Image (tube, rainbow, N blue to C red; front, side, top):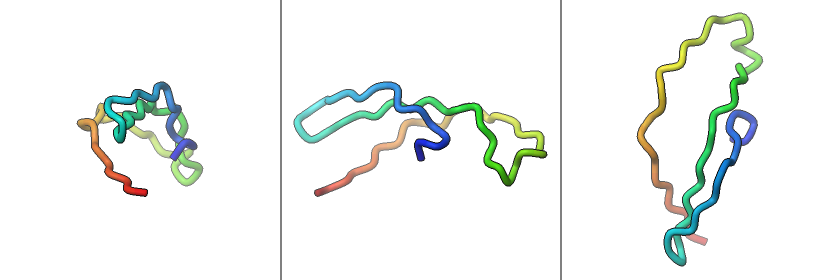
Length: 52
């Protein structure tokens, strides 16, 4: 995942919750190097639950 995104900030909101802020890198996957890609803006934030 970090191949295409930079981790910009880690924010602890509660004892068991971390918010990871990512910025998209301007890199095309190698299989799409010759294609014209168009950005469609960002999706809404997603909450992922991981229980250890």
